Length: 271
Image (tube, rainbow, N blue to C red; front, side, top):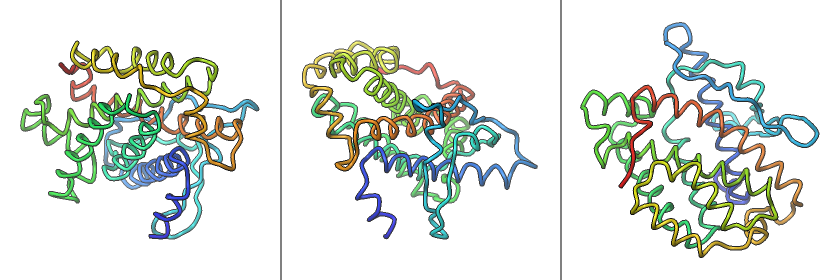
């Protein structure tokens, strides 16, 4: 309860940094306990994002452990040193996706379609996890289940839900990167460019048309930055938060894509 109250006081970006740090901590613990008898499928080894001074942006990401109340620091350098077994904690991952919904809400009605898709996909995975919390505490076990049942590519599968959540995180990372790199660019252009490189290749004409119409409703770039910033922060602090978030997210995305590819799901498209 205390941790929940603390997160409510944070911005969505700061909360996402905390949740990502916790997720990575859980993956590292799984690695330490299973590296003697498990094959390594994923590697958290993407180059770390750095701030203007050349320091690792994620180095200041701190998360209080859920079980001890002790502050632990998860840095990108530590992540790079770990080879990770096929383990992606379901609940922490879905928590991050829920925070992304809150970020997209700040953009406004433009993201309504994507928001609904994220919520639907999160619910689908939550329902399966609730049916057997022990077995499905690992997202990879969900992929294994549906691969065996030969239903992974069906429209209502949890495998497709994970695939689209991953692609949405791709879009979010691209959007936030462009937001801090090109603050004078119009928000409409930032959203459009991010969509073109991440989601559009996998959308059919129906989905693509819906997003094209929605682009006309985005706020001004400066307005969105103010909505996402902590009231006590300046623009440099905001940029550091974004860089920290992205530096933690990108290695996770790399591993998600690698895992999805191993199940031959990477090229699945929508209508």
